[in-house]
Length: 200
Image (cartoon, rainbow, N blue to C red):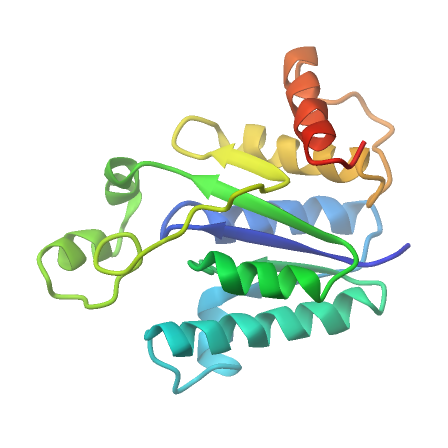
């Protein structure tokens, strides 16, 4: 099997790490080699010392992208769960890969504030956290993600199913032998999105 990079992007608390772990578990069950690069863990180990200026954010995303490139070209599915707020750097990282799938986790600020157990949004809105993406720092929505998830309206299972079915239709992973858990309507929406992007 050929490797590829699956990149989760979205605002803080939109569900990137949660969905990445669920997808990882499914891929491992299917015998697919996979590694998850979580944004927080990368900052602690690979990008320690970097701040949150645009330059430092870009350096961090380039580092994650480079590791993903190395993994994917050696037959591993590299899953990146990092905010990656700027379109230009996301496009740059995409160009490094032959097989790349962008997953955009879209959600309203109100819903993100509700699920934010650390209270970061509340602090950012009060001016206590500087350069907070989505509040005092910009987040540029992806223009043409392969997968669009509305995580404030979908269950985790629904979001995971969208991702997995997209990867199956792209023939990046083997199709499961068991019955799928999504409707014909959902299947058609996924196929339409991939057709619009020129994949099928």
